[in-house]
Length: 383
Ligand SMILES: *Cc1c(COP(=O)(O)O)cnc(C)c1O
Image 1 (cartoon, rainbow, N blue to C red):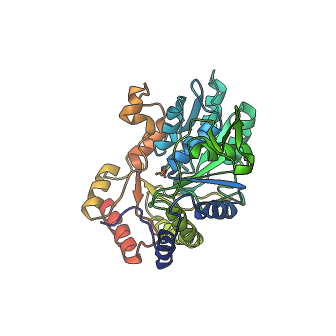
Image 2 (cartoon, protein in one colour):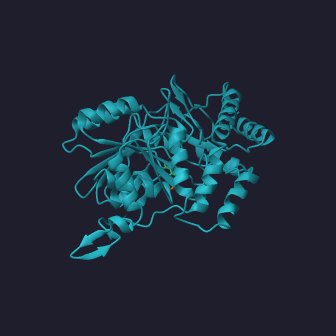
Image 3 (cartoon, rainbow, N blue to C red):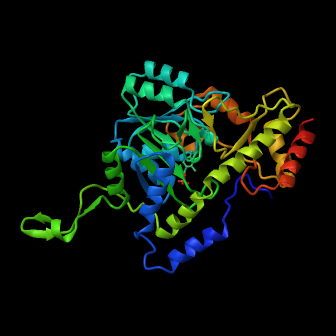
């Protein structure tokens, strides 16, 4: 089966991991801060907090921005459920903004309409740079000032991408940006994620809660409580979300290949675009000022244009050992969210998109003959 996404691990990556395994520090050693610095530097951000997953990073970001019971977080209907779950885990309510039918990102017109109409404004809006393509962050930033919300960019798909001349992750238009290092994403640490910010207070809050909410002092500036001397104390309710040095070493090594991974993905995406240009498939678009990392390559079969449905195409391709996939089910259609009261039809564009969209295999090691096979199979099934 040709998978829809897959990591690439070099001999150098393997050596980097082995070096740490043989060293004194497997976790909480010198490599994690080096990794944080390397990612922050690459993305033009001041601070990075590396953790054991992007989900943990999203949760820390929400906590640092003060999300709590009674607050609301809005995200896009088409995302991985983690984007919404973290709000619920903070005790807040979540709501979904419908997508743009061409970019599949959160539609800023819908966001503005929803903000105008809402009695209770959201505390946080979380756009997702879906497939690696930035949202209209400039407009979202303007709205954040007008309506007083914070912006967390879930850029789990998007490391290596650019927007209006800035690397995604620079936080030019957001408070905190998150990347995921799960193996299907652009670069990997096995499991892992990072939160980037330019705000020192947010940085310190996320560092604190990454490790139990415990603050440390050295022996010369130990806390002094009722004549007792403490060199660490818990001041918030955190978790153990720490990344290991083993993971960070893999991350540092992978980061060296980031630009090449992204340019290879973009070449293969362009090849799909060229080969499908004479079909009626709706293909990914890139507007001026955008540079997508192409985590995913999504095609859309507009309803009533083809003799077969997206579901049939999916089944026929799986029979041919082509590991196509769906990204994503509108989050609120999951049974857990239905039980919270969300109804079918909440975001109509997202639901139409979900009926028509299919993710094709795209990753740096996808071989030219595999890609040709995929393209030929799709064309012969559709026409
Ligand atoms: C992968 C992903 C996540 C979760 O990432 P993990 O590192 O697996 O926790 C969150 N949001 C989006 C949009 C993702 O694609």
